[in-house]
Image 1 (cartoon, rainbow, N blue to C red):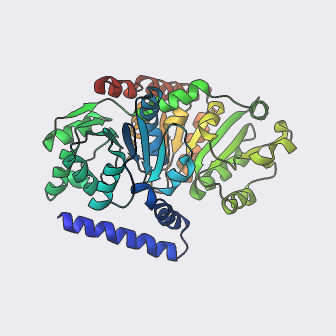
Image 2 (tube, rainbow, N blue to C red):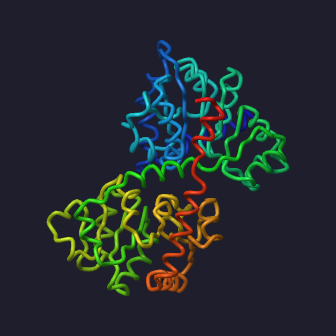
Image 3 (cartoon, one colour):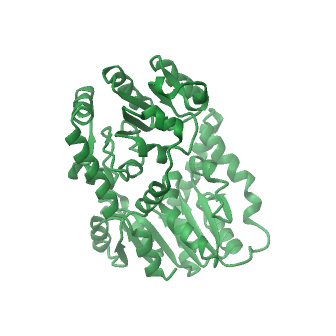
Length: 407
């Protein structure tokens, strides 16, 4: 089975090369980044004591970040941080709490051995969904302690299929699973793994930390004063379409678009569809905030703080592969709404069940939701209170993990 798995890894890389030939920018970055870093995995072993954390992309980085920063603050270990995806690496490649930030080389036994020989980590953390089976085998063989952080398992995963015996066996590489919910613990137990602790999602600790220090610039305070503020966070074009139709219906609400992609073509396309009175954040100083109706954020790094001024937040990509970070908005006591692709995100499912989050799949449902929340102060306040309480009550996973590991 491992032979076929390894073949699939090589085939995946072939598809990335093919995508790069057809001009896909992320595929080009994926290949170029790894090529430029080949020398990082060879030569004399790195000195000092190292801890290695691997994440897929930016969202998983934010989940592991509080643990990483806790370790960094103690100054006992150097930290190696690896990314699978360019969308995470390119944004965090200069992150100052890690001593070395690299792309994870493709999942082969040879690459895994090179990594361990170079950095000889004393402890390894994989975050949420990262299961690279050749790396797992080499880590286990080297007897390096390996932990899954903010893990979440679902019955549909191959680990729990009748034919999934080989995949279940690979989980033996983990010394312990720090998981988000009881359902994951039950699935692991059924598969024969009792080395699991339900401690919640470390991302809640991160958003809580951001919220405690968030500052709203004076220009933005003036922009929102006297109005309700609607924030579209990490939006894609299908999300924008709904918001654009809502804008003319809500004269007493101001709108902030924070596109997931801030490339020039994306920003220009959104701007061309927005009504008069729309301003780019990069040009805000040329305008009086009181006269601006719609603001487009054409830079990165502001969204988590911008949610602080939101009365209602729409979380993007609900019509794509799955919604972005719900907790970033909910931590401020802000109700969240999103499209129908949310089922893989526990916090979204929980908030819908509790009444702090809402999903829609068409215009009728969308306008009904917005009318209920933007024009009924009691409904808005109740939903926001539920959202904020949920984040507060489910924080603390990082401390549970560090206490358990003695870090």
